[in-house]
Length: 380
Image (cartoon, rainbow, N blue to C red):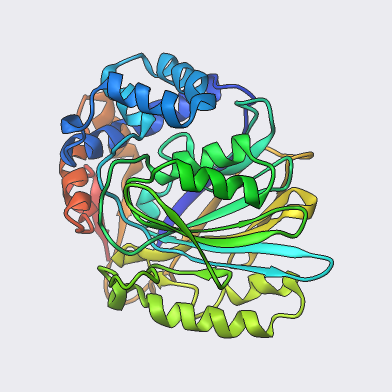
C-alpha cells in the first residue's frame, strides 16, 4: 500500500487569507482530536491567554490575530494557545555536524503521513523572517530565522505530562525572539513544555547544543549533538523497541564521529537505520530537513527529490510525495480512494467520522481509513 502527502511552501508575512485557508482545511480534524483527547477539560481561555502573557508575551498579538481569523471561539483560542494540551506522540532522529567553515543541522521526521500538515511557511509575524515546518497550525517542528538560528525537534519518548505549552509553540517562540544558541537556551529553561522532548540548535556563529526538555519545565544540555526518542535522565522510553531509538542513537553517535564535512551529514539520514519505511504502522520518514545556519537556508529531502529554500529567496510551490513501493499489478489488493464519490458525499453533507479517528489516534491505534472515508474501494 502506498501513502502520499502534499507539501506546500507558503509565504505570508502576517496572518491572513493563506493561513485562514489552512485553518479551514485542518481545523475539523484537529478539533475532533482535541475533543476526543479531552482538550475541553483543560484550562479555560482566560488561563491559556494568561499563560501566554506570562511566558511568551511577544506571541500574544500573533495568537490574538490567529484567533480572530479562526472565528474567535473559546475552543479555537485554547487550542491555539497550546497551554496544557492533550498528549501526542512522534518520532524523529536529529544530529548536528560542525567544522571550521560550516555547520549543518539535520533531522528525519518520522510519523504517519496522515498526521503531518506538510506546510513549509515563511512568515514575519513578530517582525523577523522565519521559515519552518508547521505543526498545530502555527507552531514549528523545525525551522530557521534570519539570524541563522536553527532548531529541530524529536519526541522525548515518554507520555509524561506537566503544566506547560505544546513544544511546537515554544520552537516558534525561540525563532521569533532569539538570535543565538545561548539566547535560545535561556528561553528553553524559562518556558515550560507539557511533555518531554529532545532539541538540537545551531546558529550562524557556529554555536550548537543538544537539549533535553522535561515535562512541566526544565532543560538540560547534553554532551553529544545527536538525539532520538529517549532521554538520558534514567527514564525508559514508552515505545523504545518499536522506534529502535537506542539503535538509531548508537548509529548517529558512530556516524557523527566520522563526519569530516558537515555537508555529507544529510546523506546518512536517507538510508537505514535512520530512514524509516513503516508507513502503515505510523512510523515512516516523511521528510529529511537540512539546515544551513550560515546561509539562512534549508533543504527538504525525499527519495530522488529535494526542495531548496532560503529566507532571502523563498519560492512558493507544491510537491506531492508518495511513500512506499507500489503494489504489483497482479496478486493481492491495493486500496484507493474514490475522490469523486468523496466530493459527492461532502456535497450531500456526509463526512468521515473525525471524532472516531481522533479517538483511535489518542489511543495509539492506527485508524483503518476504510471505516471512515466514503467511497474507499478495493481494486484487484
